[in-house]
Image 1 (cartoon, rainbow, N blue to C red):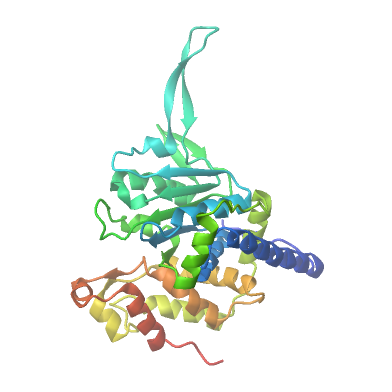
Image 2: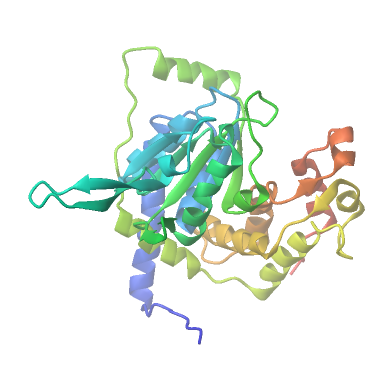
Length: 341
């Protein structure tokens, strides 16, 4: 038997929660801006993942402040933060923790004791996640989906909220392992972090090469973040907007009749229903962040690329023609326009 839990709120309480959401969002952005220069779209997408309760994959070249962005976000949220540096020799138990045998000094008896790994935190920075083999990458799968981990047959639950913010270098670089498709699908977003413009790189020099120490202060709490995640799911979505999201995702599948020619030419596989779910959830968060109380077609279109770019698989024609996922997705959005009403 399935149940639906719908919080009962009167209009005054709901309005107060929405106002607090928008105030907290503004405060978080203000604190992040003390440390991070530019990257407005990246910051917005990472915060969207936070308010949805999803995980985020951040892709960029070394030295583009991927790790600094995640650490700054954790400081701003006031959450427990841990970092794992992924290396080729990292083992799954280095992430989840392991059982060890301890001797009771009083009785002399030995017993198994579970020692928690860095997975037991609120914000987990999986730094350079694609520099470790797939076996170790897979140790995160259960935690990302089920918010728990199993060690030697024992199930251990993680304390909410739990976010995996993973950084990866482009797969063309030496010493990288492509992430398995099953793990990629667990990430809400794949955020692309590019180089800064000239003026913003000058600002970075002013922040990092002097005696000035940039630091973000906490402005919220774990309990409040869980409340904001609940609020996001309460944002209404019109049927026409939901149909638009379904149409976009179905058009990414080369075998679907609605797929445009460019998709049939360059995609091997499209996105699953999880892509639709994540587009809608991300659109709800974006609507509240933009101080609106319903999801628009614009929200769905804006969230499509970061949600879908890691859920579609290019074929050899795309590699030969040097076509990217984003290029095909842009053409797809042109071929599947939003309804006018």
